[in-house]
Image (cartoon, rainbow, N blue to C red; front, side, top):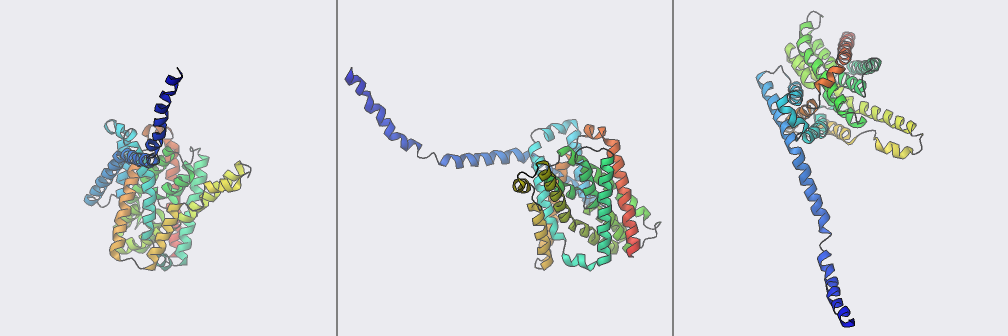
Length: 376
């Protein structure tokens, strides 16, 4: 009995001695697991990113046929259609959801960074201090007026802040930038983008009709357009009706508004940090502050690109390529944001949202018109 009990012992100990040999490769498993995880993540976003790219291509094709229709406007409309048409709804809410969300958030950030290459400090300074002061006043009046009205009208969540940002700075791009800081609900972001895009599209048809009745020359009309229309593409589509001089002036004034994106995002982040610190009783101020950086990384990238453009070291071909890349990234982001719009949910708050949008549109048009007359 004793022999039989001891005989198996070597057999059990022998595998024990070989066990380390079988467990030695174990450290390689985490990296393999990470690689497999990355592949799964890429596979998950591919359908939605491909859908966003297709939407951007269709929007660009339509713009080539009808130059008066800006690419971002069409891209948002295509995203909204895909999210609400029965045949495509399954894609936007199923396999394509991860990729469309990626496009609406990550590609939006990348597009904002590249947008900085369109703006040089010498261009802004060339407009003069009077025009700069006019732009700041228009942005401030529109932002605070829209924010106040949105809250008074009882709009949900971050909609008052997002709509105020979009109307005062640069449309959907500004909404995307601020929503990254505030962590806003996707439906709030999508509804705000849809509203700003709609009113900006209306401006393309309405403002040229008011050019001469309001007594504006071409240069003044260009400044009014740059100060009062939301998206860069919509500014171009509106101002080009008055000729190249108006278009050049409109783009410069518009880019000055774009330059205010960074301080606005920093201000929102600072207010959010203070609110969180107050809510926590300042028990752990450093931790609260760390969660909300004053300048998110993509805004830092935006400022760096402005600085690079201002040095003059980049050739014209690189800047043209960067502009095309920025248009592609933002068009894909617009498709992603549009795909988040639920028309049924939007209809429930539609009248209030529409009222805020129309009043804000009238506000920025009136204030910018007065500013153009005062600055000549």
